[in-house]
Image (cartoon, rainbow, N blue to C red; front, top):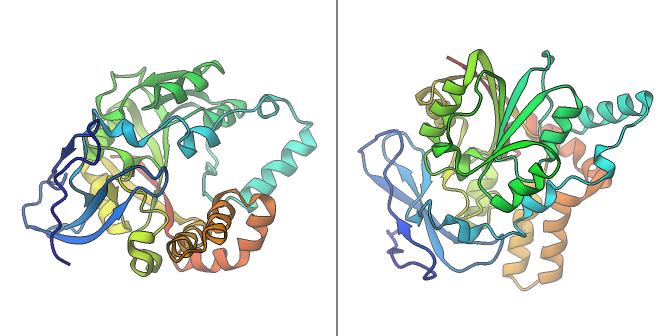
Length: 327
């Protein structure tokens, strides 16, 4: 693939920057693909490069930290999907609570289940509108959040949660002493993931745990769909990990990988097929596949369960949740 000159900003409100590998490699880069924003359909073409040294994939040139907000409108999906409904804060009978918890673990397509550990202090980076903070608070955790979007953070604050507004890389030191830090599909959005991981390690108590989920470029679906890969999400995703490059990045940030779970979901494959259908003129079919990928509800989870279980066992669902411990 030839190198593409993408130095011109797609909009006057956007400033682009060229960046080197965050791990300090100086072995040249290989262009992998060029894609566009398919989430909000905002203008611009963006290139993904592979570091010739460590193999880490990164988006470059990319929107600067000061102008990346252009690609996060207030109706950006994760901000809307994490809003807390009034029903979500109610109390359920004990038996129903146990049944709901069992179902959530059985169909935990996002691998967000916390292993058996006593409730303590938790920080969520990229907490959006606060649904996960609400869930963990209901389970006895003392929770705080960091969120880039002022509007999403305000929604979480309105529910009584302490949320710092701004990038995690430049956040003032929170209260610290966290037992658990979580970040669901957040690390790939950060301009300086190594600096962010080092901050999180400093804020976490000795032996504290980190749980993060990221798209997995090691899955065959990335190679199959390329720029139409549903989890690519340019330019919001600034880095693109597989298990090996994520392990190296965690170590550079002061963490040791403990466990990897491949998520039991076909969302990436279905969404990617939706993009293919749209590009070939089948707009309605494509949109149905994209909607079903993420919001298929209980029927969708049940329909995907067996094939997703097999693909997850093979590490081929394209999304992974990683547990690491502060070194």
